[in-house]
Image (tube, rainbow, N blue to C red; front, side, top):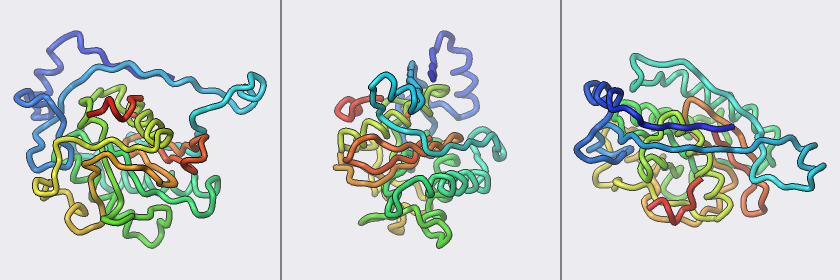
Length: 251
């Protein structure tokens, strides 16, 4: 399974700039930030090798992670930058429901790798839906730690790789769980959090701004794709994912 994004022409960039989707003055993504003004386009090529349990046993090989559950949505809101809260919430609930029976009874989600592009309306919708999921008595999989459920976005570290961005989020989540270290989300501070991102100011959610030791049972990747992945290492019991850069390279 592979994803790639190669920028060979500036035409699409100019179109995105006209839509206020891409910014060029400060080429970086600033998710969840009041100064977020669009995302920075970036290139990437990502490859994941998929194999069945039977094939691994025959080869005597091991895997980084196991896909437990997956779902996706093509539903959208008013525009490409304005996702539907209802569709996003339904996606989270379906994946949590499908994954729960295959995870240990005490497995919880304490970190979410967000889509987090640095577009105000998109970030606000994502954070709103996540905060509602955390507060919902019907969704017991989320377990906010001190300061709330931790969230972050690899796009703040490397930019938005567009068609490869989902795999970049998955790879970050897997590497973070294997190394036991969660890299910081850059360009964000509590003082400059977006006023539109409900849940960041009331303790329901918090953005990871410093490298953290990850002792979580599970991680969720928030995008139009959601996967439930089990990490094959005692450090963590599971990973709910849906983008691979070593944490020390993400600063």
